[in-house]
Amino acid sequence: MYDECGLMIVKEDYCCEHWEPDDGALVPMKECWCCKWSNFRLENINGGTENLSVCNYEGNRKEVVNR
Ligand code: SF4
View 1 (tube, rainbow, N blue to C red):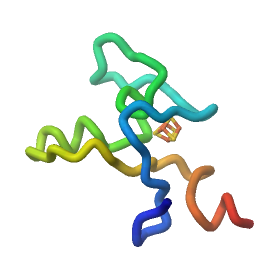
View 2: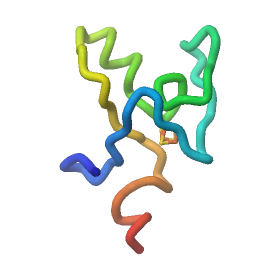
View 3: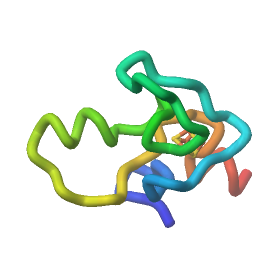
């Protein structure tokens, strides 16, 4: 599933081989929530309650995956 920009939509507890820890996560677990490529923490600061976010990793973009 992708958003209108072609970014992959991910759940908090999803993870992939491109996972990299985010500086803002104190105990980084191998989940999208703790990955530097997701927007979870950003969205939580903005008051979001969704448990979905997008993956900003270039290699996971729709057009790259479907190439
Ligand atoms: S946010 Fe993206 S790169 Fe990070 S683990 Fe999730 S799917 Fe993989």
